[in-house]
Length: 173
Image 1 (cartoon, rainbow, N blue to C red):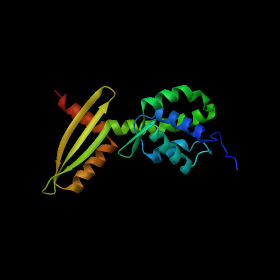
Image 2: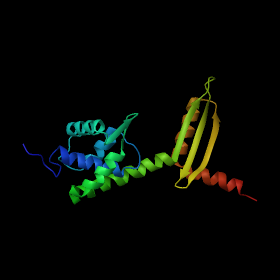
Image 3: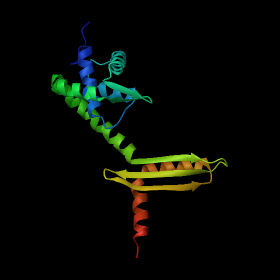
Image 4: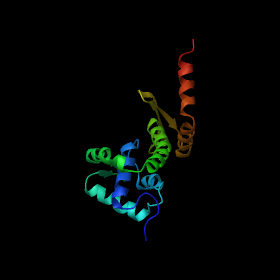
């Protein structure tokens, strides 16, 4: 039975994968790639899994720590064949990429880690960056792991607020 959608065969699917991976802001998991690729009804889990596996074997993609990234070989091939992908598919891919890239950039710019101590307390590391570099890096002591987790979670919700409070306090006359 013929497939529905613009992605009709393995080559179409691989072109779409290269298109997506060339534009994603950071290495991604298979499930994230699946979410991106499901913008066309011709894509299914098993064909995507098989295509991605083959692309790792042929060194178009790399796989490290459960995350996929495009290689230079993949990037070159993506540039060559991206016009072969139908415009409507590229447009849907771009819409999916926009949302994911925003999330990936935010994760890269706002980080918090909990470093446990032997006595049950922990250090909470808070990190904030922008396109120009590191804005703030701080370590705070938390008497319990639970308290450290709450601090890290709260920081993730409004990192800019903490930065503004600290900068404002340090700049007071």
